[in-house]
Length: 254
Image 1 (cartoon, helix red, strand yellow):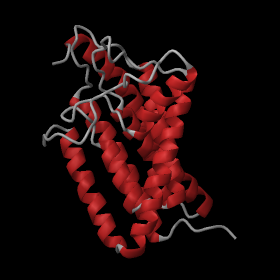
Image 2 (cartoon, rainbow, N blue to C red):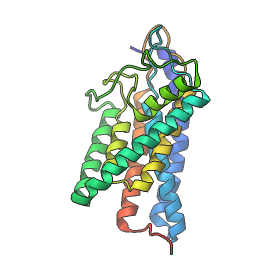
Image 3 (cartoon, rainbow, N blue to C red):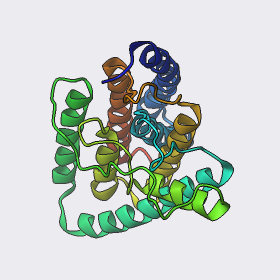
């Protein structure tokens, strides 16, 4: 259960951020598809990768759980943010490395169909059309990770960045991190994986820093429309990036 007034306020805050990302996504997608210059297309593709990651990161951190004495709310400090960025870089290296091996044996068209189908399912789930739990670790802060020192804060951020401890039950967890992970493993080039990861880290850091505390011991989740907007942005950004890459519009410079 969630509380109506705080949920509406949090949804409006996320909606504002989502609309900004939507404008950036629309501009970058249009430029990437119609620009004739390789430099403009490459820059737009990088921007789309950032948008895809940021949308997924914001969605993953948008659900706020009620704090308790054993699982206090995460405070986004400087060292927590450093831990998040290290975590996403580690995840990008692992997924990008696995993807580089998979692409040696998996036909590109098969990978694109799998990611496209997954994107459709995730968008429908975020819209509330489909309902099923996702793999998630509901533990937010393990007991052995202190939050009163720099090392403890960095470890907490690392856990957030890698998704090892989402702090959200599978029924409330966003599907966008799973979609991005699948795309990194199947379709996103190794170097571009770090750009997507950087966007994801920025989305997590900004959302955790901005989100309010849950009240009355209830879960605080954004409205379905906000989650759908973030899902559409992520899916469109990934789709256009794949389209441009497959079409060979982005070519290395001399």
